View 1 (cartoon, helix red, strand yellow):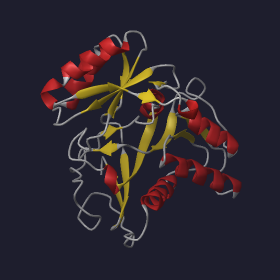
View 2 (cartoon, rainbow, N blue to C red; view 1 turned 90 degrees about the vertical axis):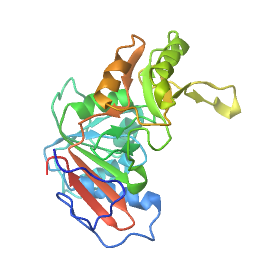
View 3 (cartoon, helix red, strand yellow; view 1 turned 180 degrees about the horizontal axis):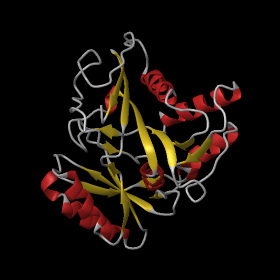
Length: 267
């Protein structure tokens, strides 16, 4: 494993496999996301099977792949979308698609993350697509993660935002309570994710692409050993999967006000 990636450093420091661009201090967060996404697409080669990520950063990578296909700079690409939203985007852009049943080995996946810790562990799935993302990205030879610098944290859950857990609808409040109790020492508050109905109607549980619900874990303190935490979460029968992606990212691309940083886990 490469050296630890300190979320407080800039692209000017001596990290493994670093590429730096001119200062980007005048750009918006959305523009930084696009820069990171375009950098990630440089890893794509003709003939690859590509995992297409989900979210506000990954959508730029999907659009860029489509653009390069239209220009003839990429050929024979097959995309495997990680959500129905990405599937719809890719279809609209003319990207040929498949799935893991037909292509069980993915050459490269590109996706964003909600958090990245110093060891390149991730929190993903705040958009609700964590199960399909983990299946596809876990089947990938290389997994490139693209973020802007606001997503860098000292520890998983360190942003104060949710660590999502996908659960079955049956007795979901029972499962929610068990998850909250599990991390009580870390000040955990577990909430069932709700979605406001159309036209301001009554709120109902948010439903994933797989027909499940999401329990969001809000942590005040570090939960410690992430592998132990992962095993403990998955031990509950009502849990389908969690949004901690541990040891999966092979490359991290960060766009920030000081430039673009590329960190290789094995560099």
